[in-house]
Image 1 (tube, helix red, strand yellow):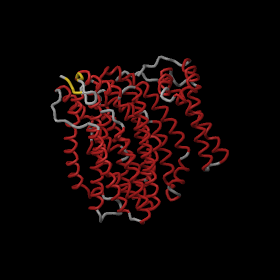
Image 2 (cartoon, rainbow, N blue to C red):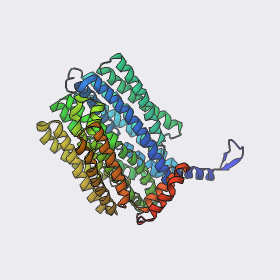
Image 3 (cartoon, rainbow, N blue to C red):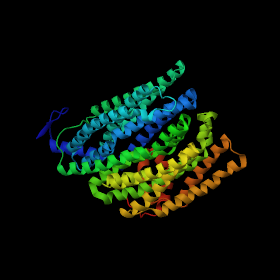
Image 4 (cartoon, rainbow, N blue to C red):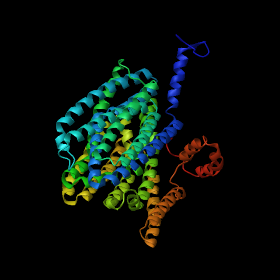
Length: 545
C-alpha cells in the first residue's frame, strides 16, 4: 500500500508515513511539549482572565453591588449548566484520546471522540429540559418577576459554553493546546470591546447578560471551527471491546465526580447566599472567588491541563510506575507555586480590592485573604486529581468530593444563616483544608507514592520565614498600598531565595530547567554555568519524569 507524494510526485510507503505521523504525535507529549503546552495554556488563560477581570470591574462599578450580584448569580447558573452538561465527558475525552494516541492508535482516538460527542449532545438536551422545569427554584434575589429572561440567558450561555469545553478538552487529548488558547483570547478581546460600547451607551443589566450569552456562542463556534480545520473530527467506527469497557467504567465514575464537584465548588454557598442573605453578598463572594481564581486557581488549572494528558500518555507507554514518576515531581512544583501565590496574594488583598472595585466592595477583603491562603495551601490537590483520573481510580476521587460536599453543606447550614458572607467563607475553607489532608494521606498510602516530604517541609519552612520578613513593612509603615506591595515583594523574594538556600530542589529540576533554557540561547549562555554548578550539589535521588 502506498500514498502518492503530492509535492515530489514519487511514491511513499504508507507504513513509513504512519510511523512519522505517530512519531509527530509522540512529540506532542514529550517533556519539551509539556512545557510549551503549559506556557501556552497558562499564558492565554491569564490574558483571558485579565480581560475577564476588567469586564467584572467595569460591570461591578457600573451596576453596583445588588445588580452586580444578580449578574454574577446568573453567570454562576450558566456555569452549573456547563458542569452538569459536560459531567465527565470532557475529562474522559482527554484521558482516552490521549491514551489511544500513546498506544499508536489514532483511529481509536477518533472513535472515542465520536462516541463521547454523541453522549455530550444527549446530556445537554436532558439538562436543558430539567433546568426549564426547575428554574423557579433558582430565581435571582430581587428578580422574581423576570424568570423567563434569566432562564433564557443562563440556558443559552451554559449550553454553548459546554460545547466549547468539550471541544477544547478533546483537542487537549490530541495535544492541540492552542485550540483553547486562541479561542479564549479572541473571544475575550471581542467581549471587552463590546463591554466598552455598553458602558458608553449606559446600558442596563439585561444588555450585559445578552452580551454574556452572545460571547458564549462565539466560544463554541471558534472551537468547533478550529478542531475541524486541524483534522480532529469524530468517527462512528467501533472501538476495541476492552477500550470501550474501560472507558465506560471511567466515564461512570467521572460523571459522579463531575456532578459532585459541581455541587462542592462554592455552589452550595452561592445558592444559600442568594436565598438567605441577598444578591450583594453573592457579588462579594463571587469577587473574592474571581480574584483567587486569577492568583491560584488558573495556574493550578493550567498545570493540571498539561499534567493530565502527560500522565495519560505515560500510562499508555509505561503503566502506573511511569505515572508515579511524573507525580512525584508534580507534587513539589504545585506546592512551591501554591505557597508562593498564597502569601503574596493574601498580603495585597486590601490594595487589590480598593484599587479594582472601590470602597463599596470593602466586604470582599477578608474573604479574599482566606481564599488565597486556602487555595495556595491546597493547590497540590490538582496533581492528585490528575493522578486519580489517569490511573482508573475515579471512585476515590468521587469519595473525596462527596466528603467535601458533606462538610461544606454541614458548615454552610450551620454558619451562613448566622454569619452570612463570613459563614460561607468559613464553610468553604474548612472543606478544602480537611479534604486535602485526607487526600494526601490516603492516596499516598493506597497508591504507594513516594512523597517528597523532605522538600515539602523545607518549602513550608521557607514560606513561614518569608512571611515573618514580609510583616516588617506593615508593622513599621502601617497598612497602605505601598507597604502591602512591599510586603508581597519581600515575601516572594525571601521565599524563592530561601528554597535555593535550604536546598528544597533536586538535580533533576535543574536539568529540566536547563533543557528548557536551551531554547533561548541568549538567556541560556548567561545562566547555564551558575545553574549547573548549583544543580551539581543537589540530591539526585528523585524519580525522573
